[in-house]
Length: 311
View 1 (cartoon, rainbow, N blue to C red):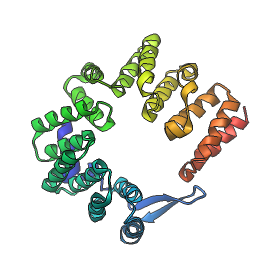
View 2 (cartoon, rainbow, N blue to C red):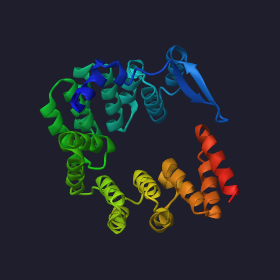
View 3 (cartoon, rainbow, N blue to C red):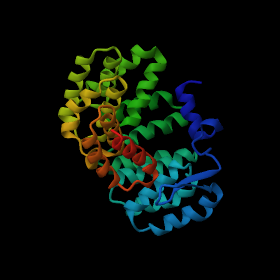
View 4 (cartoon, rainbow, N blue to C red):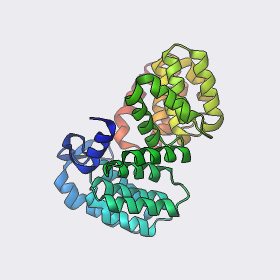
């Protein structure tokens, strides 16, 4: 089965193993003590989710968050009315039209998905993600050539949107293996303001032990994308995996902020502190990490605290 067929099956339900709505029988939640609780999907669908949506019905920010969480748990038909409501009240048109288009797409309402995304593209300033999802609609409709053209248009609009870039490069990999994927990253990296593709080119050089070349690329990325959490996350992760932990402190530590660079980058930075026995710096980062009050990550913060205090 090719990638286009796989994507089509996800949205038409022709392959239950790859259908994102085919989740387990429970929804995972956390208490304020970080304890995991499992709630039956039927109870979540019939009681918890409707109450969540009702409580934030007039708050576009909170409603959007509740919708995204529901979609991550595989609920799509259940949030269509809430997503229509979001389109009515949300000033951020690209996100509201996008999630409504996705809800239609995942419920195989392809005509509605196409119309919604086209309308969103016409009224929004940021169009790249909706254009990528419109390409997915064309895949589900069997229009593969149109889908590929639309996908490349989306990448030209924003070469740094991860969904479109990942899809494009996987398609190229299926055509010609790793050399074709690397060539596709270089093609995207040549676009104006592109930095995400350069991360994967740098990864290639790290894996080839071409460390100086990789560092040069990282300097280039950080000259324009130092505020991007994903850039910091990937750079720190790849350097750590390739035993270049000291380079993390040369390249990233001087600009790093928990508030600015988020959870994944912070986890990598604390792990780097533990690996290099930088106890004071690690504890400072951990204190900032705790202020995020992520109860679902308490087991990670407790583990970090224990390891740092043993240094």
